[in-house]
Length: 115
Image (cartoon, rainbow, N blue to C red):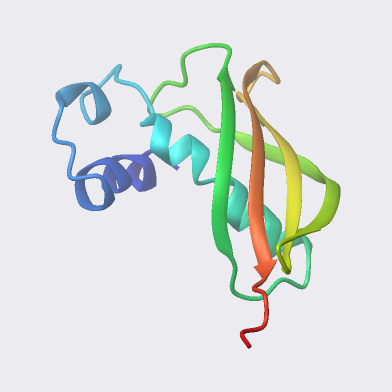
């Protein structure tokens, strides 16, 4: 997990700040937010989608080297301007079960038809 978080900070975010890579450092907050997509794809038959919004409440620091667990559930679906949205609530837990972050992830799973 930590190597993945380090790689995310360096390659995806191009953020070379040592706080994301050094011993005793932190997991990049962008990596934490990005955990919802693998959760959704792992748990549901879910095709390509467009990220619409993330609301994140960080509760405690997430340290490199820490094993995290991601859990969540579909909260609701709705239609707006022809687009079909899904809202998923998630939690990221530390290896001791401590809640590290709450995440509400909104995605467009079906784009409105043109014309």
